[in-house]
Image 1 (cartoon, rainbow, N blue to C red):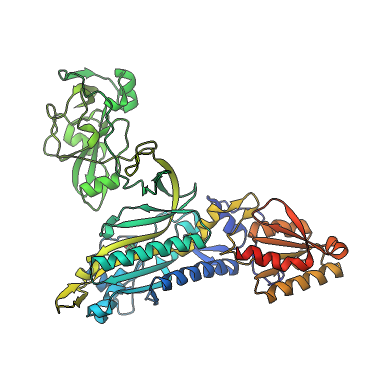
Image 2: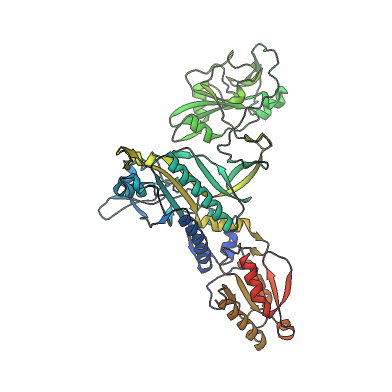
Length: 568
Ligand code: 9G3
């Protein structure tokens, strides 16, 4: 490819709307252009990167027993009505009508479609296991599409669905996928960690997310350096950490005047108590019902865990008015003592609190020496908090660390959630009818490209891992007016192509500095410069994008040196 021909519209400056580095660089380096909010055009160099990622994925999916299909993007509402999910996903689902006024959606995922296919084709255990996958656009109408390809409304996903006759078969499929994902992200040159994750609304219970570690990641993970434990913070389990006041004698309950003292910090100062001795009382609206949550003053509520304890579609903090209707006071003065007819879910650490402080359910008053059992009842004690850095690893007791991650893949055990809803059955060895056991496994292909940039860049631009770079080498003649520079560059360019190396010749009539800057911005793994030294001493300047310094290599050795680097 010649740069004078290549469609790679680099920009001098960064568009203001791009907040994170991958969005900024993919725009500036001429890889993507926005067509609408969360909808992008992939320009030629991006298309080459995507194709390399997809080919790595295909290779590993095929090795794991997958067979590639292509499923429809337009999906009939009937299937989603059968599984009961048509109404579960509100505005996030792109819905449309055909000319006969029939309802459809643009596929956000394909459990319904693939299970509908299988229920009509599979009827015997002999046909299992079956693993079908596609690489296809997905559509999700994100409320706030942002961060470029990281959270788009149209994105490319590989999704594989496994069909097995029993739990053992499902476990085998799951493990094969887990290993395939490890191979894929390794081959893409990414630093990643599989983490135990929350199965969310899709049911099933075993799931792992594959996180690319990057400071711009939207997900928070806790991990242990001394063992392989890692978990999405949304579900990371917590042990109650005692504060060592269990020995204290229980004192009589006392109401104290605390004018305008509302927040935990204000109570801590006003009453001179430790936040760990305070009971933080939160009122939530779960669908239409008010529920009360108690958590220690120094901890943070984990609403994902709360939603598991009290399953509901919508969960949000109650308004001041809703709180006043129940307690007659402002939220700053609410507490568990005296609350009636509302479920009270308490975090495990509330159980052993002695002589705690809470609101008195009366404006400008708090209670001290509050003791559970004696002073208030709870519906139950549950793990409702976020785990914190330094807490013990549940597997090996070392102290946990925290990192941000970009979720690029997830593997789920679905069990019979969809085969039951759509009646996908098979006859087993004994002629008995059984529901097919399913798993589903996704990789965000476009998100993986963005994650690769988040993890591999510097002040000059993108540093593509060589396995997914759009081209391997850029050859730069210092001056296109110098016959010798052009001749040598052209010869080297042709030699590289003859060896199957993907190379760009920067034949533009630009100053060398501009060509060097573009080469760094676009992110070619290898830059070869042909100039006076080549003509006089037969030396080519060889520079790796991952190194600061370049070296001079005799022109007859350059091709082998490139091959050597690409093959390691
Ligand atoms: C929807 C909408 C958004 C969604 C879903 C359905 C996420 C939905 C979960 C999954 C699970 C797995 C197969 C590949 C891997 C992920 N967002 N999910 O089901 F209607 Cl609007 O997609 N599906």
